[in-house]
Image (cartoon, rainbow, N blue to C red; front, side):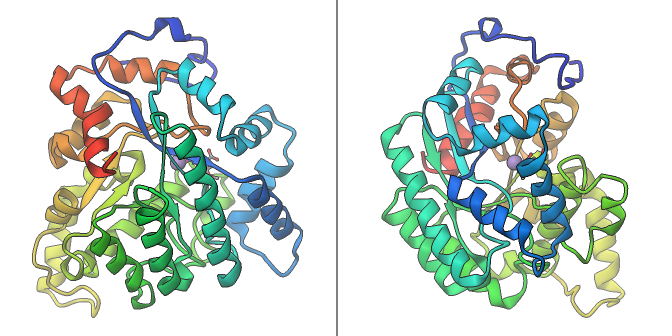
Length: 360
Ligand code: 1DF
Ligand code: MN
């Protein structure tokens, strides 16, 4: 399979899509209420809010005259015909939609809590209007964890949403901090997955990424989010919440590739009692990756990496995702259709794994 570069294969068209024996369910798709664009504009203009990651990301998407920013602004805010027409043109039967990164996690606590509820109502309405095309994940404000737990319950049980979206760190803090545990506990009790989606690295981490332009989706996102997932494992969050399931995009943000070394060096660290926070776990790092983590193919229409994940995690743990509207080439859909996999495994990848994980 050849690598797909933006601009080269945008030319593939919908008529090149094959008729396939599965539904294509894309599981990491983003939206942004127009009101959140306004809040983000306010943050950009607020001199007392100085998150370098947010400023570079939304300085670009809100202010750049580039075609990419203009289109992404238009596509993000639509939950109707424009989105549906793009799905049709790319052969996507259903999107699992979530508030775009960083969601409410850059807002002050109270605003974050109320805006999450507002966005969830909006997304739930769109899903009810198009029940065969849209499913949604609930936004929550991790920095108000008790209310986040309540909002997740409302999202699942009242609004019909299918999981929680969390955009990695919240003001530089990670979900293994006990202050966030009520949210992990709620997700486990509700038997609903947390989608741990990337965010730009926090102020503490971003400097050497930013000065080379590597802070965003090219690499900083993956480093930040892979680190977050690994912290959840090594700090024992899955021993504490053994049924918790976390969905991670971009093929697990590289952790499946690292699996052997993570097991080896984690054990070396534990045996040597080198770190206070690296305690023995019930299982190996790889056991948690196989039992508590699902990965999606967002941004990775690439056979060697998809096959590695299926190999080391199991075919039931790898789900298709597109990453609309940040990456949505029909050529990538065709490439994923054309993977050298059995019909059964392809149907799991595109359809049935997502149906099980998100209870669609
Ligand atoms: C980008 C990509 C930005 C993704 C995102 O949120 C995002 C990007 C602001 O390409 O700048 O969520 N993504 O998931 O691929
Ligand atoms: Mn994404």
